[in-house]
Length: 259
Image (tube, rainbow, N blue to C red; front, side):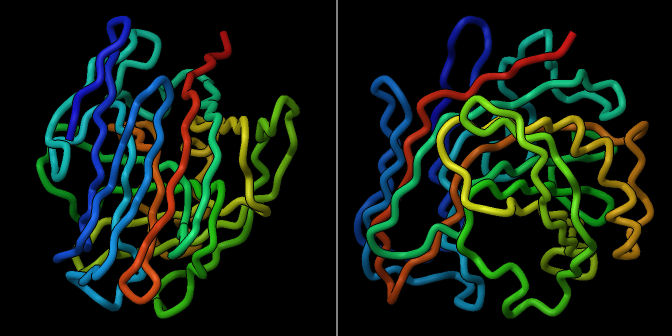
């Protein structure tokens, strides 16, 4: 893991191979001048073979006091996380990226966003929220998990290579992740594979997701009491017969705040 500093703000970077017990090879995260993430591994043995994810190499902005980052980045005064969701400015998070897969599967290139009622927690449990926004994905989200609930779709004004498009994103909810006391996950899946310059109005998504959670029987979310703790950007990937050769290029990530 590394802490990257620039102009008063910083990002954490981590390969985050959370479901790999052993493997040969490496995950290289190279910054020169943009971020290239290249996974080149063989003989991968999973910790939990039934889970179709090996890891999530990527970046984090904000505060996560739990594994793997257990820390806080330097944040901009314009987006000073953690911050109560209802107090968030209207902002567009804009990435410029490409993905490639030679062997294995890119489950998703995505945002992984964390919300809690207490940003100083050191572990996650029911009452905390994970919000994933899948911009480019191959994973069948409902395969093998009967607990994931389809709860409809949300129109999100999405920046796609210079043009705002009102895309219809499919929404799914996993009321408990991993155990009866697990956190709640909500997923927003793009209607097509996005690549290039892609902008998502993250505050808009967070302020409008409550009714979708309620459709899955989760009625505890309140934008006035929940903090946006952190925003991660990365790629969930899976191997094919123990081999993974894939990755992504992240050319830029910037925040445009509407004043």
